[in-house]
Image (cartoon, rainbow, N blue to C red; front, side, top):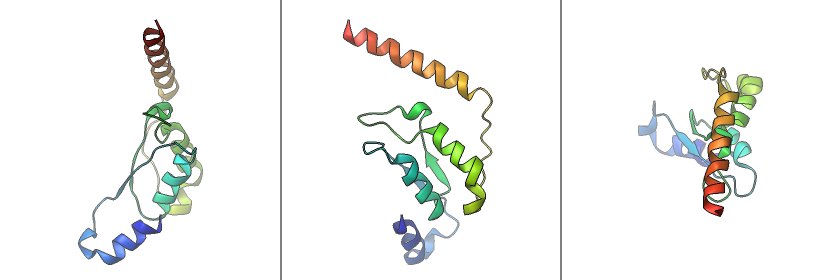
Length: 106
C-alpha cells in the first residue's frame, strides 16, 4: 500500500482528502490489505457484512472492526462504529443469503 503514501506525496492537492480502500477477498487477504491501506493513510474502508460480495467476496466488516478496535492506536485511528446489533445483522445477512442460494438451486 505504498501507493497511497506515494500518492499523497506526489499529489499535494490531496491534502485534506479522505482516501478510501475497496478490497476483494479472492486470495483471502482482503483484511490484511485493508489494514495496510489504513497504515498508508486510508481513512475510509469499503467493507461488507460477512464479507459478502461477488466471486471471492469483499473485505469483512467484522474482521476489520476487530483489528481496528484492538490495534487502531498503532496507526493513530479509531472507529466510531457501534458493534451493538452487529451479530444480529450478520445472522440476518447469512439467513437471507442462504435463502437466495436455496431459491437458485430449486
